[in-house]
Length: 136
Ligand code: ZN
Image (cartoon, rainbow, N blue to C red):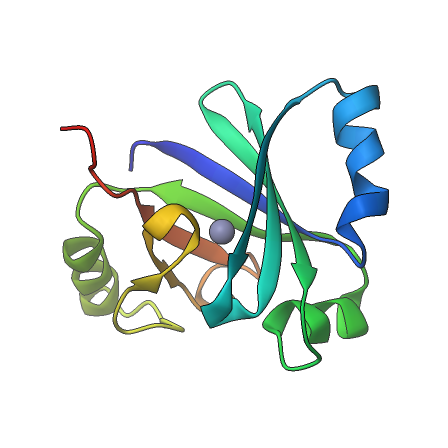
């Protein structure tokens, strides 16, 4: 595990959530992206080597929509940066950790991501995240 890649925060409305991060926390806004696989619009804020990702649901079918409905806005997941996501998933599976995604799927910035099941992690939704190696 290299570092915390990002912390995902579920919000009902991206536009109205941005003021706090930009004008109050003065974080660097890096742009937005639509992640079709999760039906979310994501806004990125850089903080040191990590990021905050604000997640706004784009449809009622989005996992973020059901999260907000059940638990309200707030911290949704913590993403850990890894070098070899397939190897990590195998290791966790072998150790008896329940996985939400047995195989990696495509996340923001073309990264490969997979979620661990909160039942195996004291209620924390962890994501493994392997960045695309474009410039190496
Ligand atoms: Zn994430």
